[in-house]
Image (tube, rainbow, N blue to C red; front, side, top):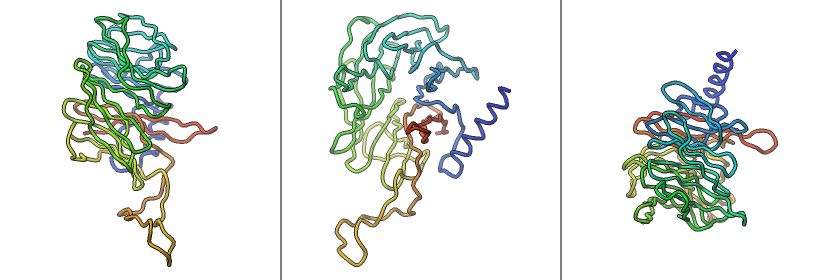
Length: 294
């Protein structure tokens, strides 16, 4: 029965990505919000909780929103956050972090996005050398403006969406230095993940959705690893036979829009991971997790 169910999931995911640029291996459906490290890959399954994939073995974790990095793995149950040894899953730190949502962990730090009583969101961090001291690492923003933090060693990368555009940032937790990595006024830049000097992120525009891998800094756009059509159709921007005001350059191959959306990512030296959201009943979405070879 389990083998039949797994086969059915595989068929479903292959159907979802067939014909898309960069279509690659399905990992979990439903499943999303991946975090990857040398010690394994973790993700969250809505309504079930977190999972760890390590050495081909899939392990259900005793909490949600898992993260992995360095010697640690973390998950939460409401405001109670557990940081455990990645090899044994034995708890090392038990923390109460009000409003904690999305987690990131490394050998020295825990970072998380917190939902504040006002309804706004903020990125926060604590050091394992002083786990009782939690500090804000971003300003409070309206819900939906701050992306999930992605942590590697001492550096956090994340996106921020503003009325004037979108931006990708990195923050050194040791020095407090913040660096603008990318910005766009028309397109959305979302969900960065970093390994060394390489940055994985998504660019969502009127001609399509792209999962890109490029240099951490500079203006080079990088390579497109995976692509979906745009979320909405488009017109010429003006009425035929009248003014051409508002005319936009057309997409090279006008694509048929899709209801699927690229979302959270993770990166290792060999593989990029991306969540694909698809519409479900009641206005909800169902995530599927894909692995894309670099």
